[in-house]
Length: 165
Image (cartoon, rainbow, N blue to C red):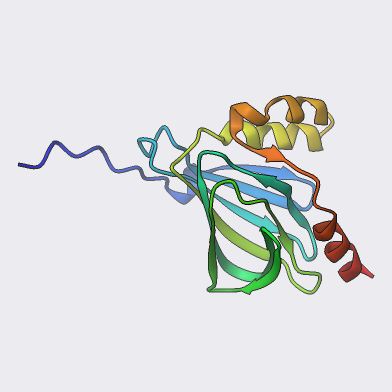
């Protein structure tokens, strides 16, 4: 006999909180709490050539990237690749990754962490840092809280910077 289903998590477009950090816009869709821990989702829109996330890894969640528009440059482990509109990737937990829009295109990407981790406060912190209301030190000290562990990845930055010339 099936158990009572959990309520469906729904976020209408007008109800999504929108944040901006430089040339990146983040629409907070459904966080882990609303999805009963299954997933955390957001939509990230990056201007042409904009950096999305610096190299990092997650210990608790795999991360889904679905490119709705434009082109996404993605580092996943040792690979750096470009994913066009309609393409997707799943980066397993513990895998170093980073992303940004390609130099020739902006990108609009749906991102999902599975299982979900409460992360909307992390994105609000990024916006406060961009506005000068918080410091990067606050981001560094919150790595465990948001399961977002930054690492050095010189190859990623070499690749990104070479394409900017």
